Image 1 (cartoon, rainbow, N blue to C red):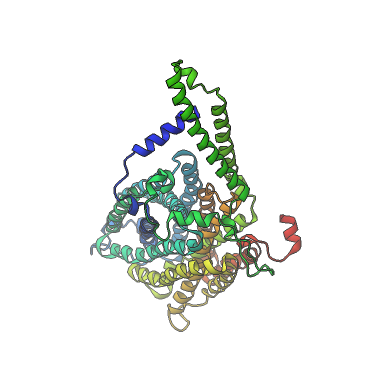
Image 2: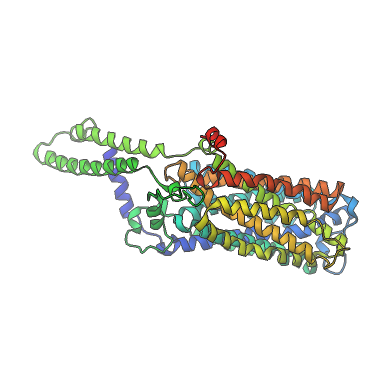
Length: 557
């Protein structure tokens, strides 16, 4: 019966003991810190492997024990020629990683929504898979073991990334969502920058040391995730007397359902990011009326049952029969309430019918494409043109990634003020230009490798800006389709992460092939073209409102 089920649930929730440090463990500050540390750790591990992969693969081909490299017994820091197909093998390992990353994103989104019904357990699963990949790296002896470790690393990192973004989105109010996700993404890029120096430990202490170093960080990441408390899955009365932490869930809910009909008449200044979180007023009123009426019915039933029990000792089944009018009415109200809530649950198919979601997917693909283009080729190019070794390449990669940390914060700040449309359009164009001109510097140009690092760093900067802008845009677009419900968040982030991984998967394969078959210059020109092609779509469809092109607007609507 609905009455007994509800009262039993309320009784259990009231007697349930609160976890220790409930306020702090459920706060948006702690969740942001835990997610940010997870992003930093996972990307640091990724950054450790990237600069050393070509050298490890080359040592395998030449029969050198890479576990003894750096101990003074063996050296293999000069790659044995451009014709060795090392860049292709490196690109394949990168592609394997991002195949796992992209495949994990929708799977973990499904597990979060349909199996575990929470973000924390799903994120813990990703961390455990990541730990398994680290142990595999510690004992790797053959190429297939390296490939399997990269696949597991991608699966774990993809699951953690998807759930991390959703956790931050669940606990951040809409007016600072871009800033909060920008902070998390800043730690994501900072981990990449830290991975280079950590990978340089390989030069002095051997291949296993960076992964032992990483295991300590992943252990801390595991503990921080275990202590997370999701307010959405806990009794509401636990949090009634807690102060809002500034960016807490209460602020999110209040912002989530406000109605904002202010839009610029020209369509260029307005942005419906607030409207994206607006639930239909009539639905809210129906839910409120249904809840209030149901509570009154439950109270009246309690009085009737008490009077009936004292007046006439009828059998218990007659006094509490589910066929009484009040009970039937309560069941109808409960069913009506459930039906209203179910209407706001978004499916993957509904997400994929949105041109806004498809544009977010395209921009996410471009960010992965632009960031990873140089991964399999830049270490080799630096070694061939200027003779840099592993530690020197790692240091240059750190310098290259430093601007990305600033880019994430700038992107979040700007998104909260101008939205994704102009932000993504402008940075896609500028990023395409910087990627194209990166092919110009070589050993014969002035400045050595400095101009190359400057242009690749600029490309990374702009890629981080439009990538960070897609994070809050995906959440708000999903909530707009679900009338303010967050049921589509996990799948929306799963789709964007899958698109990012698809860009990261295809880019190294193409860039590695172009580098071997043509030149570094032509590789940069060809790979930059996709950014120029994507920019108009960002301008037309992002921000939740189609700008210009009436024929396209008519077709889409």
